[in-house]
Length: 452
Ligand code: FCB
Image (cartoon, rainbow, N blue to C red; front, top):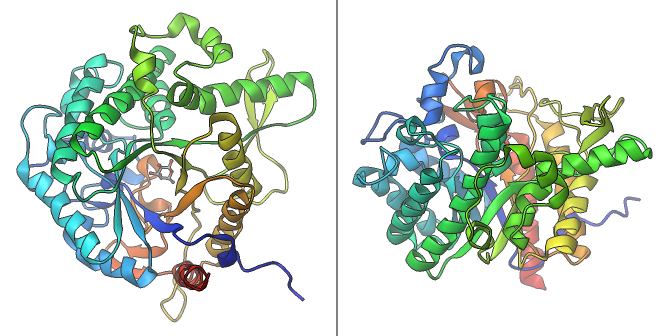
């Protein structure tokens, strides 16, 4: 007999079920209604940067099809939809000149969501910096953080009466290190110094945007989304444990400590000392502006051994289950990271703002997509969230990544993460088996909550 409780019973009434997306990955309409160029348009147009020369020019065409997609959201039964606002659609040069037609799009989107009974959960920065700001130095420049604050104020003024939850940034580690450190993402720059300067100014931008949104959107709740990875030592040796701690410092604590404690972690700051940017007197206080929730993006854990000089080296766990990004499927890691943020940082509330998996989806003879691996992935990770709630972590919501298959950055359209399959040549949407599974879970959870 199966004694495992139904996962729907692990979630309290009011728990928010959602799905997440990002502007550049779904909107398309790159040259419509006065949108300016973003660093991702430029990066995609640079030969060799994105797999198969894919671009976000059309993507899922969400810009034109959002009503159809909201109908799918209703069918799914989600309580909230996480999307991001394209900065260059609203401010084509990044600052000063406002593009009203860009703001109008988000106005229509927010109204349509509310009409459908779905709460808008908006992110201000999901990596599509206006190219005009990159031309002036991009995130390694302090001025970019100031421009971001003005953008936040503008968007808050326009949408703050209807958007109940804002996140300032999505994954500042990825934006700074993949974009400015390793050159894998737009704008494709490389170096420790630009990566650290970008990271600091992203954090400062977050702090300034919190202040701006408190003014312009006083009734909304404000948070930040950070991608967190448990760093597990490959062995019990002191060297491996130290290497894992170093990896935890640069990846997790580097962003959590400033936001919650107003200081960079000392051990990591010592290692980076020679390459740190200028940190002005009140920067750290502003970065630590009180927030209402922490958004956690989580996909996998990382196992670390010490390299020759003691540096952290990622290890692939033999025999472990992996999704097609090469990321280990390890649901216990999500419970672990949620308990840890509660213990170490005590956020008022936590949302899992992204979690999901990519597999090579194939349409069956009946036209459906039997993505049983994704369904199992979600089941394992959602159970881990329920267990963390049982441990007393104030997790208030979960957003599956992603509603739709979409443009997966440097990997283009090859990686599908959606609950809904997108047939790119026709843009037809086909809900996968996991969509039906998630829909049923949400419905059961709503029923359990209503009966309680
Ligand atoms: C996260 C990103 C999201 C998507 C998923 C797979 O790092 O925030 O846009 O690419 O990974």
